[in-house]
Image 1: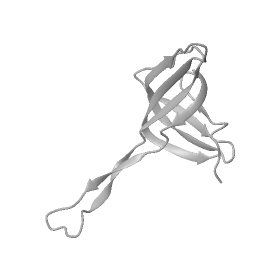
Image 2: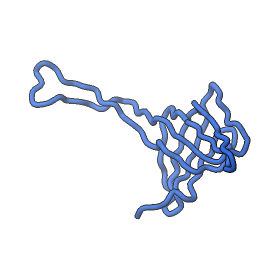
Image 3: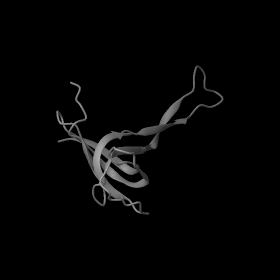
Image 4: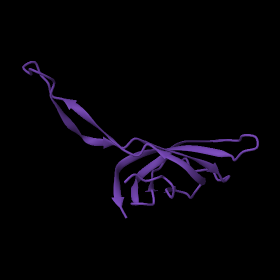
Amino acid sequence: MAATGNGSSITLAGGAVGTVTALSGIGGNRESIDTSHLATTGGRTFVPSDLVDYGEISVEGHWDGTAPQITGSTAAYSITIGTTTTKVWSGSGFISSWESGTPMDDLISFSLTIKCTGTWTLATT
């Protein structure tokens, strides 16, 4: 059964920077290694690489005036997804970018990007 994103949240290293309105980028990518050679026929052959790149997580929301920590070190992050069957995506990473917008007569917004490092896991709670 499909679920909405309502009730989802993220725990940021160094504390919250506001209310979250959107999360994207949860997933990963395993590169392929070409094992084809001159005697290969019919089509190229591949094996999976040993390492997974879990990419970047984009977070958007309404800013509370607290700046996130953009440091030279990694921290633990945890994203709780949904309310029907709750999943938790967790691992290490660092904030690689952050910005805010100040529109007239509207809430101040923020967006930040977390670069994932190491292994991330998805668990049901």
